[in-house]
Structures are given as C-alpha cells and as structure tokens.
Amino acid sequence: MLEPVIEVHNLSAIFQNGNGGLHVLENVSFSVGAQEFVCILGPSGSGKSTLLRILAGLLPVTQGEILYHGIALEGPRKGVGFVFQKANLMPWRSVLDNIILPLELSATPRPIAINKAQEMVEFVGLQGFENSLPRDLSGGMAQRVAIARALIQDPEILLLDEPFGALDALTRERMGSELLRIWQARRKTVIMVTHSISEALFLADRVMVLSHRPGRVCLDLSIDLPRPRDEDVRYTPEFGRLARQVREAIGEI
Image (cartoon, helix red, strand yellow):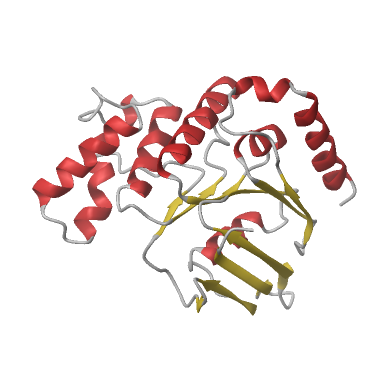
C-alpha cells in the first residue's frame, strides 16, 4: 500500500430534515495512497457525491474523521481540485479566462496566470479555442476546460464527481482515455465517482462499491490490470472477470 494521503475513519453523514434526519453514509472507512486512482461506484442515492463533497471539505462530517497527511480535515483546504458533473463554466468568459479563474482568486499576477493557463490549454488539447466562449464548445471540450481549471493550481488531490455522465457514450470513452493520459502525465491522487463499471475498471487502481443508503463500503477491489492501458484492455478476459466481480457486488446490495 502506498503512503496514505487520505484516511477516512468511521465516517457517517446525516442530513437533518423534517422527518428527523436522512442517514446518507454509515461507518465508511478507507485510505488512499499517494498518486493512487480510486473510483467509487454504487446505486443512486448511496452517498457517492456526498462522500466526495465531504472529502473536499464542502460538507460537514456527522461522525468519524478524515485525515490529510495525518491532519484532520476542517473545511476546504488547499491542494484539492474538484470537477463536477457539469462543467459550470462562466458563460461570459473565454476558455482561457475560465481556466485562469482560480489564479485570479489567489491574486496571481496576470502575466504569470496567462502563461500557466496557456500551458493548461495545450495540456488538455484545446489549442485554437483559447478565445472561444462555452456556448461554442462541445460537452467534452467544456469538461476539458473544467479539468484544466482544477489542475491549474497543481493540486495534490483531484476529486471528480461523475465528470462524463452527461456525455454520449463515444465522447465518454474518449474523455476517459484523455483523463487517463492526464493522470499518467501528472500523477495526481484521484478519487472519482462514476456509474460506469467499464469506466471505473479502465481508469482505476482500486474500485470501491457503496451499498444502498446509508452507504457503506461493500467492496474494495484492487484492479491489477497492467499500465499503461489502452482501449484493448476492455476486451481481455481479466477485464471481464473484474467486471463480473463488481457487477455481482452491486447486484447483492
């Protein structure tokens, strides 16, 4: 096991409502090593997105604790990038100006920020679209902008909440390959929520499956497929064996 970057101990989350509280997560424990790629699967309502937002410090912990390098999480922290299911780009800002936004908020001098943003444009393959507005981008291109915006401050950890869920199947596969390229180049610690078993197995070092609400970890599976990976790995017997194992865990929830 790699040195833990994130440790989650006995995490529970309860949202108060008129019926006394919605129990979303219960007794969730796991750790994530440096540069590890972990995918989280589970049925709708199992608390996957809630877990990711808690890890980002955007939602409070009801019970348990989260440690980053041994230090308790107490709200949003530097070094964590977040990509949502929707790109959430500012429609009046160009590609370059959307990517540059985190640097503007941290008061980075504009010449330095522009240089870094241009590097990210090239890194995610959007050369020639620097001055385009979000309305002129495809869904996949918009998500590349969102990923570039999350990476521009060079975070140690990248949290992705179903980032390709709104894309068509072919674009989703292409974006999965693009994300894998980015991870192999930058080697961030990644935790990604997805509903796709194939996508999870293609990308991840480990796949965790959450149960029905309240979500518990019912499977934590190492994905021992060799790296680097290409699309052909999806058609191997080992990929099929792992897919069946994950599907059976989801089916038994």
